[in-house]
Image (cartoon, rainbow, N blue to C red; front, side, top):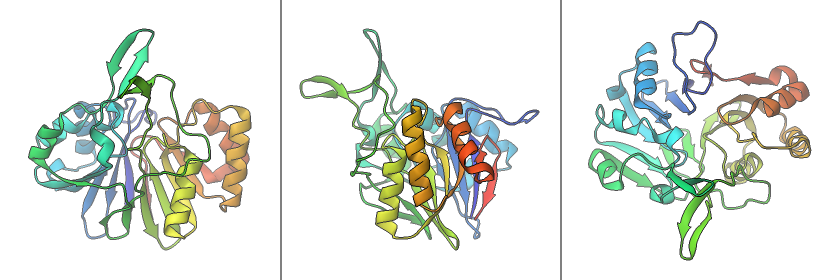
Amino acid sequence: MKVTCVIDNAVRDHSSFWGEHGLAFLIEMKSGVMLLFDTGQSGTVLLHNLDLMGIEPEAISALALSHAHYDHTGGLPALLDRVAGIPLYAHPDLFRGRFSRREESFKSVGLPLEREALEQRLVFQLSAEPTEILPGVWTTGEITDRAEPEGRSAHHLVRGVEGWEPDPYRDDMALVLETRRGLVVLCGCCHAGLLNTLAHVRRTFGVDIAAVLGGTHLLQADEAHLQHVIAVLRELGLPRLYLNHCTGQRAYLTLAQAFGERVASCPVGTTLEF
């Protein structure tokens, strides 16, 4: 499999790719079948970067969404203008309204389209259980055991029975790639928590984790939390880390200092083969 970062907050110096606060990965199988994981924040950046990669959206065979937030789903409207009838893999809670509160102002930060608009163009494959999308490519399913800290924001809210309540992030999922060297975990934002996600993958698939890619939502992790993450990663056999999006510079530097060359950034245009 070949995994390419299509959208991230960062781009390399002098790159022709565009960056934005968001995330998208393209997974290409040896057979040529392609899966898009998340769509970034805007169709403008998504289509520009796919074009630079020589990828026509019509060639994408399936779509998976890590969760509903706009910086992972904002490219959907532009994508739907170019594809039809492909499956969409996501958690059933994807369509719940998501909001961000700043002082007394509430802003929608969820899907840019209503469920009906998506249903007209895509074939829903919604499940809270691990689901195989392509041979050797799985969703994690819902990450229910969250003994470790979550990747949480105090601003993220949903409407509950009795008013506003913290977003439970039930829809947060990652992808799992089965490779000869072990599992590759492809993260969107890790709102369920990085360590919770990795424990769920290890428990569900029963295979060592060789690498972790994507956003790990360690932006607000303090030193004690980061040292705990380092200790757990050592117990997991030191998977390689290709980090981006919501990881945060402090967390990235702390992990790089601990693990050296096993940690690398993953800006737009990064391609890894497994």
